[in-house]
Amino acid sequence: MAGSEAPPFWFREKGWAAYCLAPVSWVYGAVARWRMDNARPRQVMAPVLCIGNLTVGGSGKTPTAIAVAKAVREAGYTPGFLTRGYGGSHVGPHLVDPDADTALSVGDEALLLARVAPTVVARRRAEGAQVLIDDGADFVIMDDGFQSRTVHFDYALIVIDARRGIGNGSVIPAGPLRAPIIDQMRHADGVLRIGDGERGTRVVRAAARAGKPILRADIRPREVEGLREKPLLAFSGIGEPAKFFDTLVAAGCDVASRRAFGDHHVFTDGDATELLDRARTENLTLVTTEKDAVRLSRFGGPIAELREATRVLPVDLVFDNRLTLDTLIKDVAARYHRRRIGR
Image 1 (cartoon, rainbow, N blue to C red):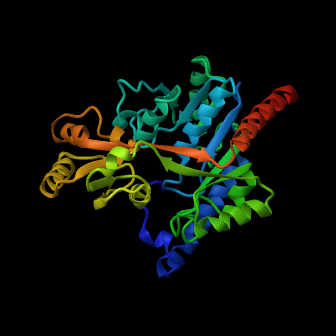
Image 2: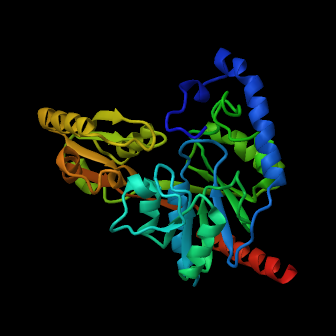
Image 3: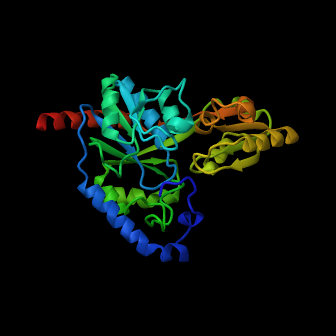
């Protein structure tokens, strides 16, 4: 299950729904474990860093991938992103054109990534990786793909939102985990904890017991000064809209009204009209995330009007220690070279 609407009980203490679905979860987990353990990933001629998560839904993979790509470029490599293009229609492999493609064709995450480095969407990831390499990339950053393991990655960095955590700790459909945490951790090389929160503690402890290095980072907004001038109507359709709303509040903004949609929500004319009318009636400034904004692009009518009227809050992922990020990149490259020599 990878839908945009996570059942609320996934992120509460286990109740009757989770316990009733436990037998199905056991089967799902067993299949996921077998697939991960028995995968035969194809090797590609470049270092591959996989940025994945343990659960369905948003955890911060995209801002992590962008931050890593910028550091990779500073280290002297030519990065390229490889993603499945969730929410898009392209089977691929397709090299994303940020000036022509839409979120409906390649997905919102791919459009954001393509603004930073060449990006390929492909359901067959190995073919997509080759397209990136042929295009000149010499360091591949996979946005997700950790559980499928169709491409050999030299390093798997698991991203955990410390505030969101892993919910009730159960496997789909009883909870948000894509596979049992112990089985996923066996295939991980490191864990990146984003932000603060007790819900991330379980993953950090599991990583520590498994001897995995733990990195830490924060999502920080930029260009917020102009958003503090008047009350805001904040709207978003990401994995956890509340995190966006709280980021605005923490930055000193007056969030007078909030509108949350499902993850990867496809905005309609009706949505746009509702938001525009509310903003006018209550004299509010519209604001949304970068990921939501790309889903408003290349439309006419009310959606185009909404995009024109909406401010965007850009964010950066900032590592606590830049040295750990530089060391990670060197480690990925070193593992690749050892892999090539060992063949």
